[in-house]
Amino acid sequence: MFKQKQNFLVAAAVAAAVSGAAFANAQPSQEVIDARQESQIWTTYALSPYLRANDLQVSVHEGKATLTGKVPESVNKDLAKQIALGVKGIKSVDNNIEVVANYKSPAPSADRSYGEVVDDASITSAVQSKLQWSRYADGLTADVVTTRGKVKLTGSANSAEAREAAGKLAMNTHGVHAVDNLLLVNAGKMSASKPEGTDIADGWITTKVKSTFMYSNNVNGSDIGVSTNAGIVKLSGKMDSGAERALAIELAGNVRGVKSVDSSSLTM
Image 1: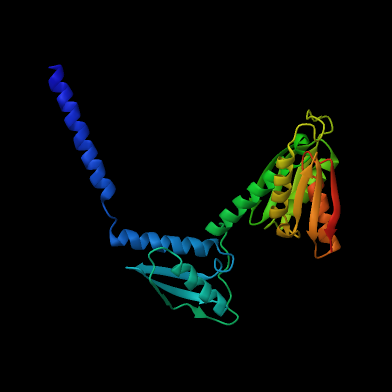
Image 2: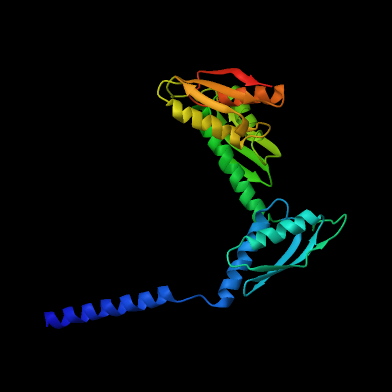
């Protein structure tokens, strides 16, 4: 009896394996492939700040993408074509997009578009990261919500300085148009953190300073060299203006663990 049951289980396992292999080797239908490619192209258009506001349609049939709609410039039309050609499996593009001078994009709906939702989520993540890296992080309990580029900060800060710094960090983030700083100052909320720089690795500081530059407006982080030694950050490179230089120094100095900023090699 036991042997019969064992043989049955082995046979069932073999049958399941064969069935699974057949399913894995099954090729999707052409309709599924076409729909997948259409979705890839449309999603890229929705994420592109240069195309999302235009009324574009995409259809795909056996590797040929057909594009229709209206755009204000020929460069937008060409961009739409190049994006479609960049999708795997697209062999040709029938670009019927019309270039219309003084074209007015459709009025935005009350609901955010897919691209706007992604942009807002990216902004929220960047602001949250910058606040966590900040030297004021231990004195902040901040919730971040972004809607169409407007950041809303709620929660508490242990000082007016921490509250102001949080607002500035948010405002100096790519894509942010406005900040509603509703953080409440709670002077009785004392930070339990250790003194600055006592246990934070130089490599961590360097990485966070570079990331802060990358996420920030008005500072070209790719032009700034960053190194850290014993909590002292050294910045090097050429800035376009005194305002950009001053902002870079301020942003670096606001990162947790930074004892001082050496900007002697940061020129204009």
